[in-house]
Image (cartoon, rainbow, N blue to C red; front, side, top):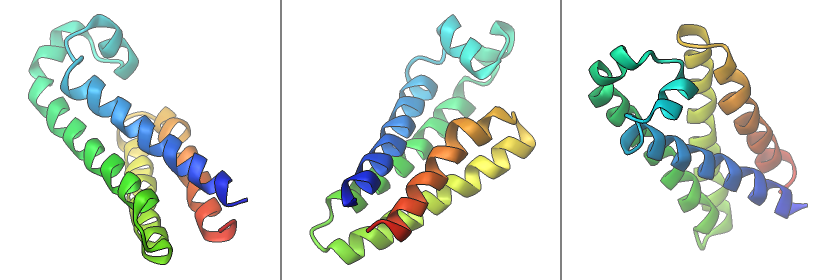
Length: 121
């Protein structure tokens, strides 16, 4: 059962690495702007902000990987709980302020991973 939480946390971490790549390195591409619902004209104006946001998503991903790889399992679990909680809060805020689909794309996977870490381990 422990593998379920590892897989779910790993998926959330990979998702946030993917968001980092989109926001920091692929922001100028039409497909990326479409994913985020940003018109091309606004994309250039938001480029620096998106890169900054991507960096924060990278911090979340690295924190989750750190929790998964930490040699002390209990401390690793606590690290995972902290970073998954950060993702949930960010998804809630993003869903209210930016786009409701953030709840499903980022919030639901993070909540499932958090529940798995709390109750499956």
